[in-house]
Length: 344
Image (spheres, one colour):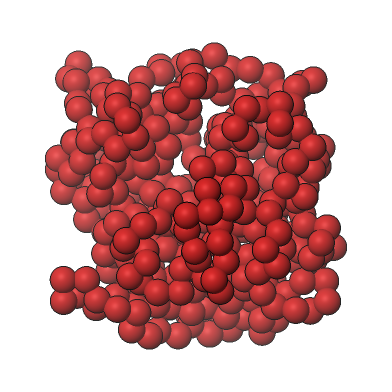
């Protein structure tokens, strides 16, 4: 188990670093303190071949020019807030809008575009890095000064654990997530439609044509949304319009539990997702269109990668019937998510 640090580039004369976490089985995770981005996850397939399983770039400049949140920490609020507005304690707040009239993934300059203060660490069971960011009152329209800590660590059995923590001096919405795009077939050029997915969720949120929740909660039973038993992603994707981009309501009741399993028959790789969060956004890479050339010269066509974003529900500040996402002074925001890799 080891953690290494190297210079990755600089932004406005501030050094940006790349951290490499590695265990004895060849499982490797690389993270930069720009946006808390996971730039690489490499893990063996059924034949022992170690290959890349996330989408991204091989240099900092490309992340600065264009990136659909590849591997980033997203916040203060992952997913969408309708019309960039919400009311809190009788006062209306207006956020920056960056997806037509809506607020997406923290706004025009969310946590994915910030330089975080890093600190690497090692202990008996894990190695990792701690990332710190101070979000000032009014940033992107949000109230309150927010202190944020995100801890990435890996274990000897190839589990990546992510701890999210925050405190505030004013009531504010918060909903942090990790936004990696996964493709367990590695750099073969295959898309994710042949992957098999299981989601431990009986219900999902209905959304409108702009992916804003209507407020209605739907059952997955007897629909193309049902992944309670492992199902090939491409089997019913044609019945979902442009593809999956939906928030599923998990059955974990807020406790750390396995909520998803992704399996690629081609490589034999499997990834288990565990979280304390009440929801998970399954996004099937619908807006990848071949305009992005990533690491290894791969052209990212539609459905080349998928996201499993553990989170609270989108647009929660505007839906009193959704789980509360307001952090208040004296409270501590904390949730944990992990991705465990193996073969079967």
